[in-house]
Image 1 (cartoon, rainbow, N blue to C red):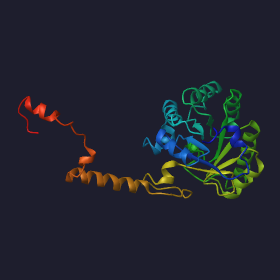
Image 2: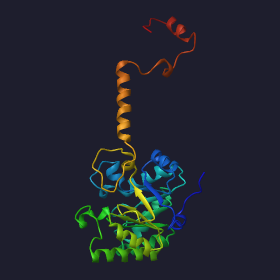
Image 3: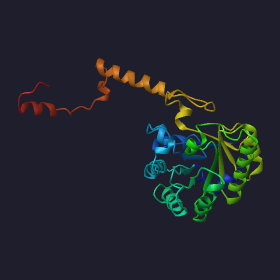
Image 4: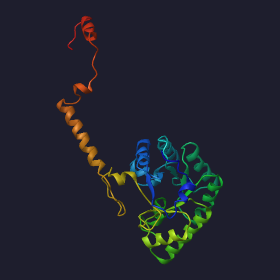
Length: 283
């Protein structure tokens, strides 16, 4: 049995073996992730498109995020559960931000929250930290900003945008975040950020020179058939396995091979005879 992992424990992993982070959206997937040794389970707003079938992460609500976080923490994982604050849950006011972050902890059972953005989100991040809730930062390709970014594009490829990202990372680090996700940035820039901040960096499409990696559960296990980003490596084809298993089940149903005698409940001796005495039957 592993010790319960916390935000400060993650921060202490800076420079060590790669931090293991994966998304999960319900109790079964959380149990699998934890059994595999995840350090962090992110209840990502990616539940919006991965599980709920929507076009982007922008459609998921706070109530839905809390619901899925509660389902993940029901698995009682040793991994740190991080609730991903959805769009507009921390954009309107500091009061709303703290209240929504608190819902992840009080109602969802999370041990931390994640917010996207740099300098302009600092007041919100600092307020959540003041409320004693650990915060994970997220820089680079921030999906909630997809419309202002003009699509899902690699960020920080130019001198000025790279400088801005570095400044944002230092600001988040000084504010006290326990880790920073770097998404969709060139590997050299991610390496520079990693060297300049004391918080561990966790990459997704940010190369190998970071302190950890995160991928979406369904991407790693091959649970859908859509196009995948360049940075995704599939380690299984569970969609194919699942289709084959269901095809075999349906075939056995139609052939009468399922259920077998061993898979069927039977009456105790004498009971069926007594029932047949009560009247006509075609049993």
